Length: 331
Image 1 (cartoon, helix red, strand yellow):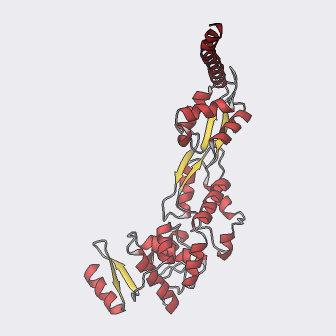
Image 2 (image 1 turned 90 degrees about the vertical axis):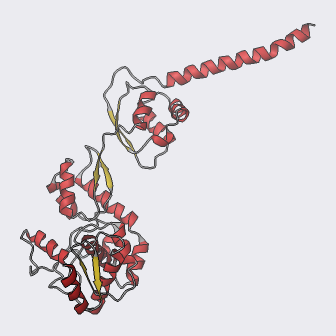
Image 3 (image 1 turned 30 degrees about the vertical axis):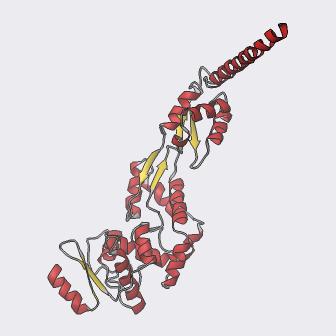
């Protein structure tokens, strides 16, 4: 009888032990989420793109911003915050609890601002965007003029600027971001997005990366309709191969803007393809992937002329006589 009574107590004792362990673990978990200190200055904490939660927790612990790495990871997992923690620069204090810090990271309360560079923007426009976010035009120009070692710049003539190579995208900046940081990030993004496949595709058309980029910048500025761009790219490539002038008004506009003078079709500039044969020295804007794709994979047509009519549509011609007729009908 006594043995049977003892056996009945075993499950209850086991449950009590489990309960005690659970309480101890829970108390440890709650204690691990408590603030590290009752006073202390806020610190800038940087999360890099692609950084994993365990690594973030380790960095927070090393920076004395959380008490327990494991408690922080547990909280993040229990509340489904893992996928919501994003890259950026955050202002965090040792007086904040692990829960408060996790919530700040998950709600994107970053110190960083975001510069959005549209496709087709010129360097001068990007300089102004940067200036609007606290990076002076002078420092941006100095960063452009400094040496850069990215391999894709090898086909760029030394005498031309980085116009065309500042990839249009969205860029995070913080109060600590310098002009050199931003320029290098934009160049590195270009290298990531405009890879070997473009070099190979341009080479198939007899173009270097710099030449393909230059044509893409003209295509970007000439036509906005994605359907028209491969055809216009083919026209410029065909004209180039035949020794014809590209005859692009937007290159004359770029030349005038560089010189700080009103638009003129006769402006004497190597960028004015209405007068100068061949390609201009470099791109006239920073094209996006759609324009680059058009040059990498141009349409297969016999067109040599195009114009944009009063109705906004693009009209094509194989001969100059047909082009003159299009001018008469649509302009």
